[in-house]
Length: 385
Image 1 (cartoon, rainbow, N blue to C red):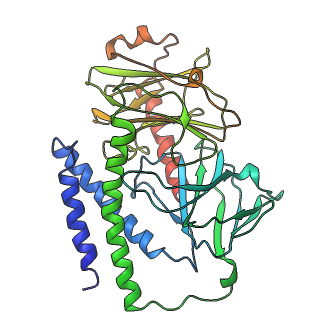
Image 2: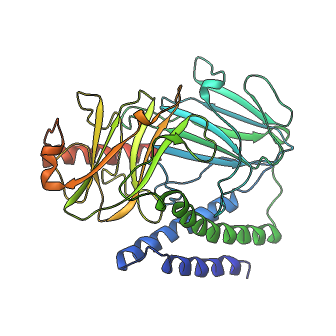
């Protein structure tokens, strides 16, 4: 049976889920099995998209294929490359806050992030007045809209980042190998399909092992209920800083995260579960960008992470997760961030929040439902793009 390696991988992955160190009850396991289902979908999709001669962009992660503390504000795309071929990427720039490109030399491992061989955003390319663009990637290329592929180049990753979910529109994107345009790939064979199932099996087990270890290395060794100063995001993103941490809160506690508005085109905060994936961001307010948040008169955003509803616009819902990850990101920066741009954290009693928030403005149930309805509509529209 050519599917047997993948069936065996599902069984191995299920054991990894069941034995994960943070699992302490039925809810953790239920979420783990849901995470596993997303991994199964994604691994099959990625294995079948592994075509470096006739590549195409696929969604690297989404609401049902989450991994790697995915950003709720980002559409992720990737395509596989050969380092000895030339590729043409065409598209139309949307109105999103950021569009960035990155060339990686391989996939994540449990001990390191992949090497970034090139990283840039659309400010470094020429875009026509109608929003269209063309970029060539290949060995030995140089000049505007021409990116050299270094030895070992294996994957092109594109990130399209939304700041205002309600108004920004995504663009379009296409990739072709230059010397294959107008030709057709050979028909699949049994050997091809056998290899694809084997690749999917390796991807499935690898991604679950990798990101559990990745989270432990980069987050869980930090003091709980704190966030790091802003730092360049690991992995080589050229214009992204991040602040990372993890929380552990009782139901009567809240963590107040106070951070200045840095003036970056994109700035956002999100929560993640112990499976190192985003919480439900469509039906709950588990993340906020600057346009979505209430900015206080002193230029600060004060996020309130809690299980109980504190009655404030910047409530970040824990959705039953008493432990989890917190991530702040700034993107498309034109300057380095310093500690002064970063967050302060304080754990307080939920009942004491009005005294801890200097510009406290209550928000009622009706207004809250409107906020959630807007998130649901915007997420649905974006995922059709």
